[in-house]
Image 1: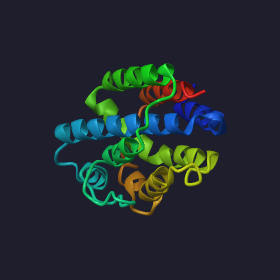
Image 2: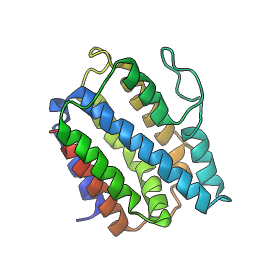
Image 3: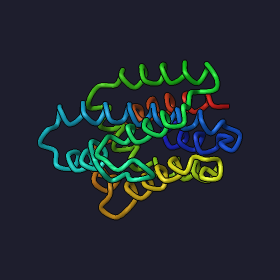
Length: 192
């Protein structure tokens, strides 16, 4: 199986049946892990201007402004702000366990493998975020912040000269990406 097949499996999950709060909790964990991986990558590749530019749009940035959140922060901090505001916790213990396992799985990748995953995620995330965005009426459920978060990420990643374009020339290895997306599929599957 190649990584694109795993991404397709993620897209094919029954997102409409997932608990919205659990989806947000998983997104929060993924955003936090992404920020940590990006920091590790920059530390190992401090002269890489493309990674630096992606970091400027993901870490301690003010490009997310929504109802009371208008300050610089990592993207996970944006979600954290609203999760705390609405006192949200995962509804099922299996989701909490899957988040812990996923963070451990992602920390097992070397820095070079992490860079590959970051480069690929900036490209593939548009499809995944669009699928999640379309699966629920987020604003009607009281989670307009999450709808905004997904829309902003789709824009930041896919616009011309955006994050996906900046990292398009990074070398990738299908085996590494398949491992990474399989870990992500396992995490997302805990929602169902």
